[in-house]
Length: 146
Image (tube, rainbow, N blue to C red; front, side, top):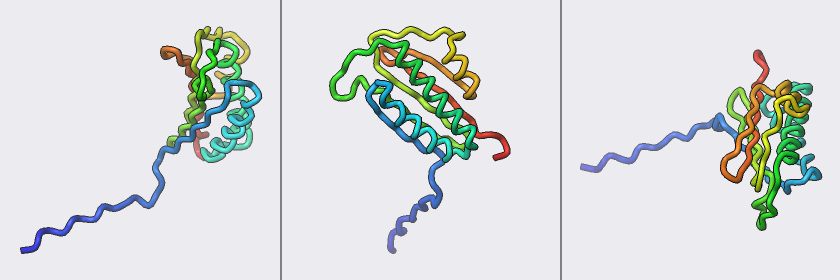
């Protein structure tokens, strides 16, 4: 009697529900245009309107600015002191996590202009320090009915 043949596994024909894009740039304002540009492309992928993409670009610019202004960076060789931007496109939402290693960080005041702009443009905003790494996380959800 022959053994049972192995069963074939089916491979999904569709893409996974979650896409991740990771960008690492020097932690300097001259390189923030790369992150703004990427945010426009990812926002379009989410299905944002032109106005929403513009808001997302502005929100990322403010988030990067807050991060750079409120941290004291240690120059680290091999890109360890770079600004990392991770876009996670998950169904109906886009989560963006900016991370930067810093010697010191001061949480921005909630009445600071950049903080006010961010909270007006995105659905969720979080500033957190995890050891030597400072993270700024924003969430933008797709407009209902789109």
